[in-house]
Length: 247
Image 1 (cartoon, rainbow, N blue to C red):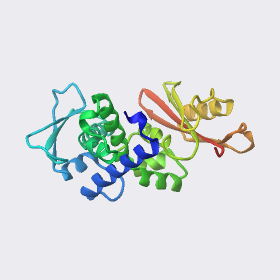
Image 2 (image 1 turned 90 degrees about the vertical axis):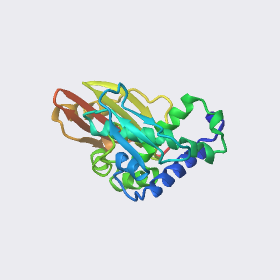
Image 3 (image 1 turned 180 degrees about the vertical axis):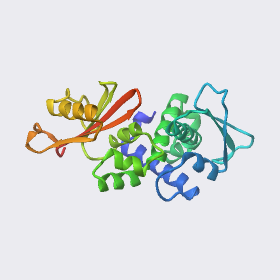
Image 4 (image 1 turned 30 degrees about the horizontal axis):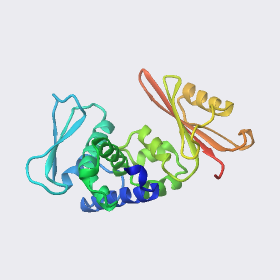
């Protein structure tokens, strides 16, 4: 059903829903703390160490909009995962607003579609479109700078959100010395890694420092290459942003 709705119309409905939820909770600037957001929306958040999922929403009675239930949260050691889990449950419960803005009745929405919208709402709640676009331009899309502003979101979530912004890019994520995924917001199938991209990544991997390449050394069509190491003891992950020339 959503495939019949123009992308611009769906995105506008999503952004409107996020603005409404943040305004109701009186959240006016990043970072968005999803746990605090839920409580401001009169939801309870409780840890459930016995759960086999990251979070779930429990209705405690009554019908209506946001503010009538408890989010049970697994005791995950990673704070960004906890934030995402709570944001997803808020998205699950607020999804009806997106469909209302689109003129679609909830009874016509299959569970898989509602889940997809909840995921998109979770991302947009932690990284609101208007704020993220403005801050991204202000810091020239530097991943570490954006992480300082949006500290409740993971590095990977921030990188994926870059793909939803207007500057044409390719984003590549490396795990343990191998590319895990590579996507673009303008190319259906991004080309193979170029020698410049590989050299930039190898330097970030080896030196554990952000690296970049620009200027005459770049192949036609590529404007800049930046790579950020997100390293932990026993695990190495790098995120690369390849800026493309105007599309």
